[in-house]
Length: 321
Image (cartoon, rainbow, N blue to C red; front, side, top):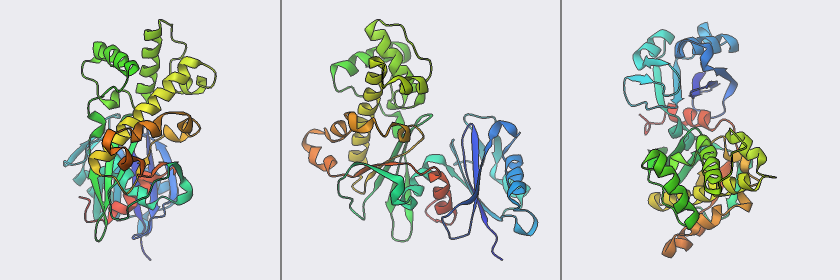
């Protein structure tokens, strides 16, 4: 009997685990466990394996786990929770023959080619070039940016830190916003605006520029109020317009003629707002390269487990270290 492999996508709050048949890409026995319930990674994995009955002769001997933190060293320290461990400690404690930790947005990028068509929502039609890079970008806790390229034998991830490029305003409103944020933070990266906290900060900045007292204290409250509150609506539409600017710039930089995939937990909740926003206009508004970007297909990824699909892809992908 072939043992299943363990895959996972682990953030600051939740650890999502699943099993997969080696060589397959369909995760099963998916569970999401609160990180705060466990002192460390090994304890969380042991509890997961007990819950799904993958113990003893059925225990995995191979694992690929995606983490929301840097993963290039021997010691891996989570950014937004206290878990810290070495590769060797995890491998030895769980009796693994293979343990491959990868970055969570690398997993998102590697998962995109395995997402089903009915879990992609078209934003811009375009024409995908088969043997070309794809851009994967998405606001969440931060702004994740990565690429993926179809190699001869496997998908090749192109890790990036594009969320930390400098914010470039394109109109008078954004110049005023930049001055507001610069007075508070100094240099402003695009991630400062294009994340959950960034959406709230954009709202608070709009209130300050209008001389109005804020009515909402969380990104969710701003989003929920956008249907009736003009200031919340302006904030949400500006957020999506800036995302269009940044996604278009990243697509030019990468040469993402294979398509742009908008990932993360925020955008699937804003599907009704995207057509009302200036996202597409901003994405293509690149001067002489307007036609280039207007031909690139753009889709929102609504699949809930893209990171798990990417971990399954990375498990035996020799292009992923």
